[in-house]
Length: 187
Image (cartoon, rainbow, N blue to C red; front, side, top):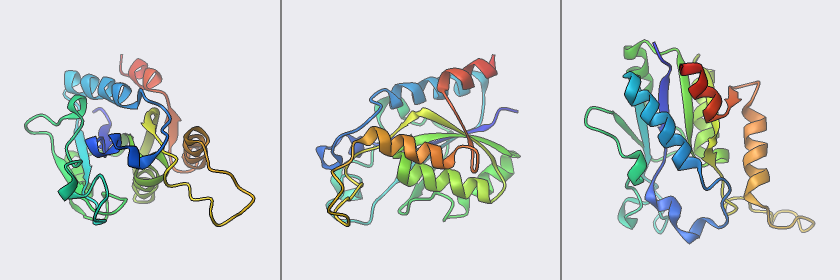
């Protein structure tokens, strides 16, 4: 059985200028390659959708940004797990679904690397899943790197934010691999 593919928060609200600079503009296209490969092989797919509780957030339900990006739109029969926190595992439905499928291995990717992706990868590992992170199908933004606590720091660029988040996950909570390497292993 293929690992379960867990796609995290590929939503239109992340296109807003609100988030600031972004790394990896190809993340969605790479995630779409994984999605296509999983669909072609009949592999298990789980979509995660964030509905922020923060009024004014581009991913708040009233903002219009809770729609999936076109290339990541779930097909009929592909389950969607909604969340309002960083982790989809807070609600036991995702874990229960994965257990029902018999999934022990996950391939995860999404937005944003240091937040929802990191939290879901850590939680999945903590409850016993063998996790592969498709690092180049994830992205980070400069918005959330608040350096105001330290007057000696400058605003941060999203690439080192992403790289640091992946580096903190790789080896302890997951294996970070490229989409190309993951797809090569499916052949």
